[in-house]
Image (cartoon, rainbow, N blue to C red; front, side, top):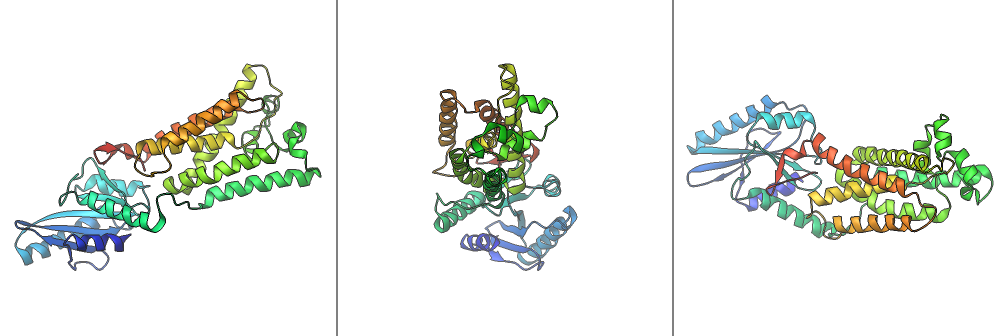
Length: 349
């Protein structure tokens, strides 16, 4: 990403100005002043004082040579859009920093930072970086992500394990067998089998139940994970599944069906759908083929199918979906994305 940004800056008229071997400094001479961009990858061992020292040293050399006022700007490239506390602390102390996500090329501008520099330089960089990524991958490119594929593999392996351990290919259709293997019911839950909130997420009633869930999860899950990161994705997936199971148990206890046995990854998958829908709602231009509208239609059709057919745990679907939307919103607050401006609107990454 750094090399691409350097190339784009040079096309824009910037030249290399040597100050510190660890950080690139690029300048463009204007009529009345000098535009200086300090471009670097985020380094946790760099403190606020270190960045400030480099800026002062660069400005001193440039003023000495050109006898002109210097307009400085840091562009700090992070691995992705998940900015940790030390980086956001640096942003709060300095007033001339843009942050860039190295995986997408998106530039994040906090409210205390300059929203414009060198005639919309941020839009110039983003548009060209996006074009390069589109040329390499295409707008509809699909990429396998590690955590989601591990989750899919675990579901498949557990399905096979149920068959092997019970010596019957139809064991996954038997509610008593499935309950013994970790599926959930209100009666067993209140008797102390609290682990069912988790184990039930990885069990499926029959091959079609497994296939349909894993087919949807493979695509939707990888799309969300590559946007928000593996660890965050894992937390949202598990949280959605657990919350969906809690809502399911509550619902069946309310209608008096305390012996109903439930299993499946649907609650977690709907949480992924909800979080991804919120993401695309905040970032509508991120993907031309996968939109919030498509996801919402998919979720509503699935819920409608559940309402009109017997044996579908719609309560878990709704519970997981709500958790996904809430966790996506909470994520934006935790990561302080509500304070970031992008094209004059608040965004989440």
